[in-house]
Image 1 (spheres, helix red, strand yellow):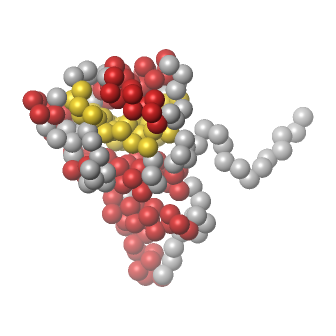
Image 2 (image 1 turned 45 degrees about the vertical axis):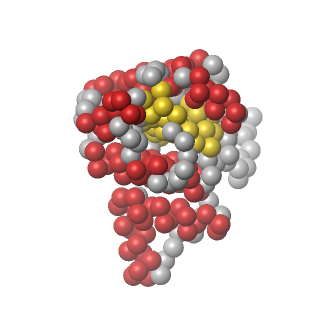
Image 3 (image 1 turned 60 degrees about the horizontal axis):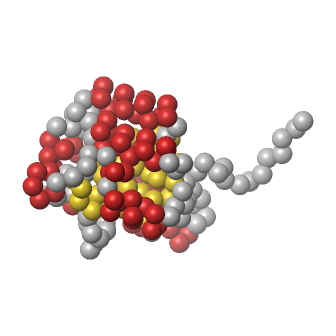
Amino acid sequence: MSIQATPTAGSKLLTPADHTLVMIDFQSQMAFATHSIDAVNLRNNAALVAQAAAGFKVSTILTTVAEKSFSGPMFSEITDAFPGQKMLDRTSMNTWEDAAVIDRVNEIGKPRIVLAGLWTSVCIVGPALSALDQGFEVYVIADACGDVSTEAHNRAMDRMVQAGARPMTSLQYLLELQRDWARGDTYELTTGIAKKVGGAYGIGINYAKSMFGAHEG
């Protein structure tokens, strides 16, 4: 039997309205021991995710662990994107075991959870496996996570993928939210974020616009 193709998006693709982004423990103390990704790249990728979520009005939870007593404040690249938003500070390493966070997840009521944070093998594995166990779809932004070693990060990603989590990257997250350059109301938002924190892709956008007046779409 033949299959009929249609010009529609697959159901596994994210949209701004169908998920909750949880950004976890992007804090100084956690970053000091992170060696699976360069600190500059980590902060850049975290900024890209935060700006994308804020720009597309994605429901977002910002959570820290022992902010005042040990780990320090969340990266300003993230908090600047969400001015005035309250940090949910925890004692638990597993975000999913914190009642205030879960109250917020339930209040938002989205079926998909997207995770980014430090460290991959502890603070991301915990909520990923817990949310999957409770029936949520889970996505992990791999290059906006980091761990004490590359081995620790990679094994954590393997474990989550084997359990059913879906890996993605920070730039992929931004472009998946846009997904069609004909969506003119968010075109400048998307390309603007890419130009600031989108690495070589952003450089290419600047070049094409400056040299040829070109633009996506």
